[in-house]
Image (spheres, rainbow, N blue to C red):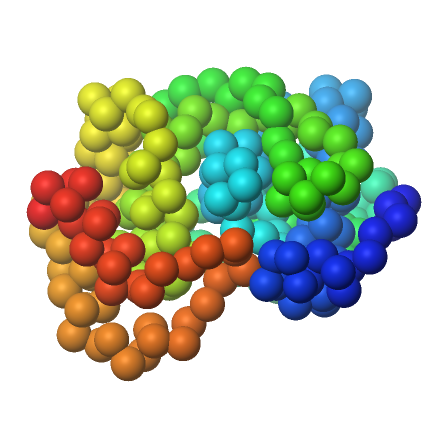
Length: 246
């Protein structure tokens, strides 16, 4: 990494382990290098998922993330370019049966690539991403990456949270619901994506997940994500339910 950083000192300041800080910065470096190359080669892609929410919208409240979810509008040619960049494909990996996908390793960072559908909910646009260490006076330059609006990303994250109830998804939804947003746009994307997932009553779907979490507090007691501050999971779930009026 081209940085002169005392990670042990930063670990004390942030409360995040040294190896996790290094891994998080490595992911950011991979992102900063990859997207300009894809743009030069004429590929339309978009950063997606939790990394997009955290790096672009959450500022100092972001959690560290260690992979990149990428939507590809020119799927096969994008994969060909990745191989040319030295990215290594993870063979025979399938993480979704309903959507064409691949997994690569690039600069020790996992890339999960999805073939974007023909119908677009919205077009990606360049937005500025920041690394957490930037907020601790480390000279990590911001980088422009193609991604979606906060409302679009948050709607998908909310449904992902309800589908798998992982702490990182609960945290992302909790933070996202505290940010200024166009709520009608957010709700519209919730409905659209729930429909694409075959969910007829998304409110019941989300509330069922919250009920499961409340009934299993012991499982979540020591579950942590790498952020400056994480409230107890049950407190975050309570806030989400209030924000969504469930």
